[in-house]
Amino acid sequence: MGAHAAPARPRRPLARGRTEERHTLRWALPASLGFLYGLYAAFIKRGDGPTTWGQVWFGLVCAIVFGALCYLLGRTQKALPRELRGMAYGALTGIGIGFLYSLTGGSVLSGTVLGLIVGAAMFCAAFYVFYTRE
Image (cartoon, rainbow, N blue to C red; front, side):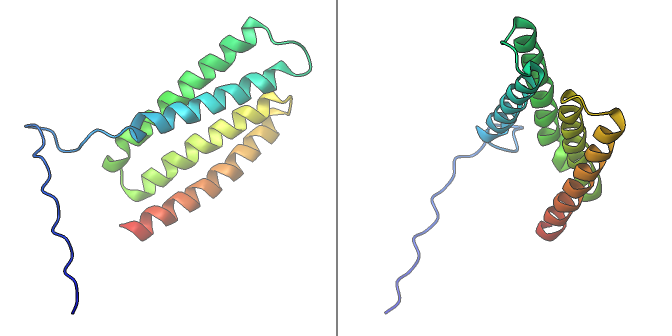
């Protein structure tokens, strides 16, 4: 004799005018990415010398800017069509990687080329994911 599945638990109705629930991942993921990005940017800026307050502030500013951009992209991604969403993820990734590469002392041209390559790869991956899930 087959067993029946348990009935779905009734969900609480959402507050009036509110279409989605709050999720911790909405702010935790951009905060974590921003923290890691800022830490790595400060580490690259430091080089071989001791840590200074200028490098700490530089890393903090990089973390705040990158985290805010990740948060804004996460909040507005549902309003974008999948092509623009993939381009936005590709642009954010490419600009971020190109900036980090420019901190190492590489030329502007090599940082731009690396950013374009990584951004194009991220666009392809993000577009594929969005296309197959819609």
